Length: 334
Ligand SMILES: [Zn+2]
Ligand SMILES: [Zn+2]
Image (cartoon, rainbow, N blue to C red; front, side):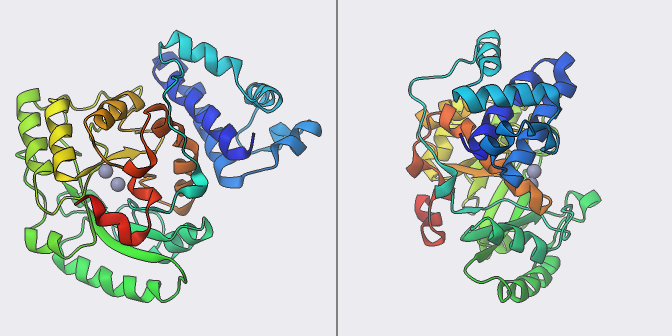
């Protein structure tokens, strides 16, 4: 049981606890401890022997007890109980995915929009994890509060990207955008701009409570757009606090599969969108997936290793996940 495997156990506990409003704070504590394990990767066997598990940031007595169960037995009785209570048992047809094979993250933000770090800091963070590529996908103009990028600022950003690229060896920076899916399903930037970018992630951010029929039409239009590569956090849900959008998932996911548009599993613990259940459905319809951190700071890249259990639980095959491919193979689904 290494730190990443243990982080996944704590992450799943946090996820299941989030579904009960009363457990909100405990849920956050488990997610934070999972994050700290995925980030720092301490030697758990050593710490356990020395009875120093609580020296890990975010690990108090309660979480240390869960961890020591995991370290000693390779499983968590607490997690198993939660799975039973929430009727989300482990499944026999889970896939076998390893973070060692994860090649790069394609959804991240910088201080060009609402990220908290520079592009260089983000690039160095991804490089430190051994990624072969990183997609920089800041927000589009509609989100004015975060200084979304219009065509002019994207050009300026591409100049900075060339400079940053020259400072990170062995890692390819991809210039993209997280473009808003507007209420009518059109996108927040002209086609001519989307066309020249390496990655276009189209995400619903506002008006998530539209009538299902209108929402279906909106999502169908986005999925059918010729320049869209990925649908970002496809439901917009916030586990434990906000229900996501409701639409004809089968229709939209089947269209995405047909057009080779990937669906995102956003690993931010506040999102975890698609959920394992929804991702399983999408996988059965033939969809591809992008598993990413939606990182707004380098430390948040660690959301991916801690949440990889979601894709396993969904039974997604390795070859359906873009992030397990080399940068050249990324566009193979289109
Ligand atoms: Zn977003
Ligand atoms: Zn984002």
